[in-house]
Structures are given as structure tokens and as C-alpha cells.
Length: 253
Image (cartoon, rainbow, N blue to C red; front, side, top):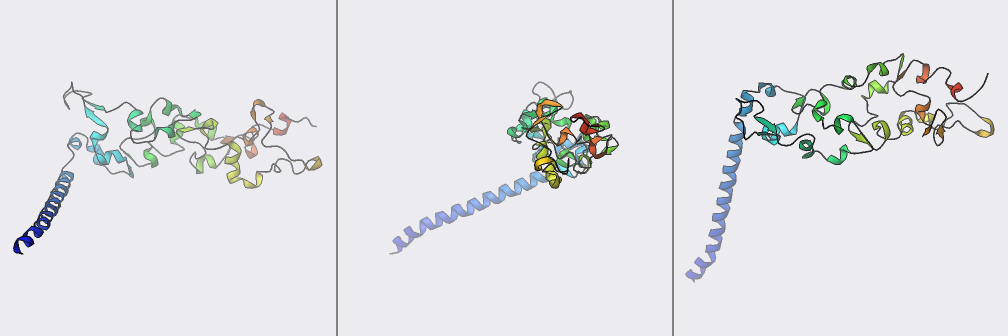
């Protein structure tokens, strides 16, 4: 009877032993990780600028410098220049974490096409959203002529919504628009969607077309809100693209 009891209790003792061993290993591993985390990053000795706080920090920086950087095998760091290099060339390195499909489309922003991710984004940290070098729309003016956005009459969307009408990377619509021109405009100007704002009434109950027909000034494109209005700024009231806008298409006296 005693022998049988000992045999039955042995598996239980072994199980307890392994449970205690696993707990000890996990505790040791956790303490080791915590101790390692408390150690100072050796890179900060030469790059103290990364100690500065910023509103937005790249997640890769929190993981560790080696996520993106690797030592060159044929050079001594830090004595020799270019002794550290990126693990991959841009934009390939960025695509290791960011979905590459979101940077493909009918129209692609030139910096994206050229793989110049860091031309717009700080790879470490920034006080601007999306790790941008500075806040739009002023940041956009480093490449885009501000004069085209600061004429006598300015569309407030171009300033207030920070270029939200355009995708900063790629789009399946022309001009990097997030959707069609008219859909964008009607999103804010819902009452103008039927075209009656152009002419109050026409014979036989017709309305002035704002889409679905070729643009009289450019037969290669379709009529849209931008056929008559500049979406950014204009020297003419109501953001018209020219003076006496109707005479561009209609003859009257």
C-alpha cells in the first residue's frame, strides 16, 4: 500500500519541480530584461541629441538603434566615417514595418518615388505629427510655390485642413487626391451638389452640369468643380479661375 502511494506521488512531485523551475527561469529572464533596459544606450554617448524629448517618437527608436542601423564590417566605429550604415536602402528599410502597398497607386508623390522618406519625415523623433520635419501647410511650401496658395482669395481648406484633400504618399486619383474632385468639394459644400448654384434656373428645368460632360476648356478631362474654381487660391471672387468666368464657354452680351 505504501509503495503504491509513493509511485502515485512521484509524477506529482516531478510536475511540481518543473513548475517551480519554469517560474524561476521566467523570473530570471524578466529581471535580466529589466536590468538590460536600465542600462544606458551606448549610442547616446556620441549622439546626445536623441536624449531630447519630442511629441512623437519613431517606434523603431524605442526598439533599438540596431533595428535600422548596422556596423560596417570593413570600418571601425566611431573612428572612421560611414562606419555605421542602414540595414537596407530606403525605402526598402521602411517597408520592413510599413505596408508597401499604401505607397503605390496611379499617382505617387515624387519623394516616395525617389525613396526619399527622410525628406519629409524625421526617422527618430519630431514635434510635428506623423514625424514630419515641420507642420503643414508651411512644410509643403518647401517644395510647392506658396504664391499659388496665397492669392487675394484663399480657400480656407488649403490652410485649415492642412492639405487633407491630398494623400501625402500615393493615390489612385490624379493630383494625389483622396477621392474625386467633386466628391471632395461636396463633402463640405453639400448644397452645391446639384449644380443650381451656377444658375438658379434654366429652360425646361435643366441645371448647369458640374460633372458627367467634357470640360469645354479641356476636352481631355471631365467637367468638375475645378473647371470654374481654383481649389487653393485665386485673384477673383468665389475662387473663380478667371474674370467673367461664364464667357469662357458662353457667348452673351
